[in-house]
Length: 196
Image (tube, rainbow, N blue to C red):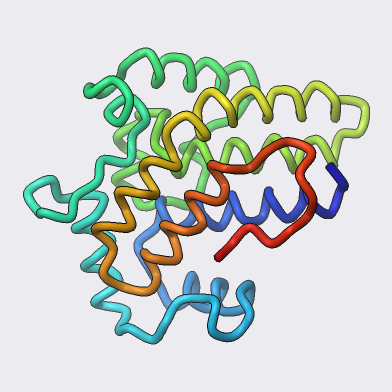
């Protein structure tokens, strides 16, 4: 994979992580509009509508739109399952602390490591570290590829499919596409644009 392709995948994974970890804000929407070409990014729905959808999708299990964004729940039907333990061990060994990420306080306080946003941020951090640390690049890329296969590709594409049926705004339809594309990433793929 070229350096440019790796940077692009890292950027898209990081942006996708931010959409899972933070309620929409003017700043986040401005960042998205800068990244995507005209007509490809989020629409013009009111911020309050986007914020309401975020909380209905990812926080409130009493709504018909709720999707639990934790790998253990998606794959094992429980919280703090084997997936969470394994992901937490990856973070520990790599010195990655999800608590340092810019995320809503709820996600910081719950401390379950297998939130999809945390996993995507970790994957992005590994790819970026490979570029910043050339002597460690091969090992970091191998870890990123293994982690992606075991903990992103294994469930995030299905999560994106479920998000497709529940998303009502352009922002979360965009997130559905980004999630599915990052989940489908294959090491060594060209630098094609991953978003829809």
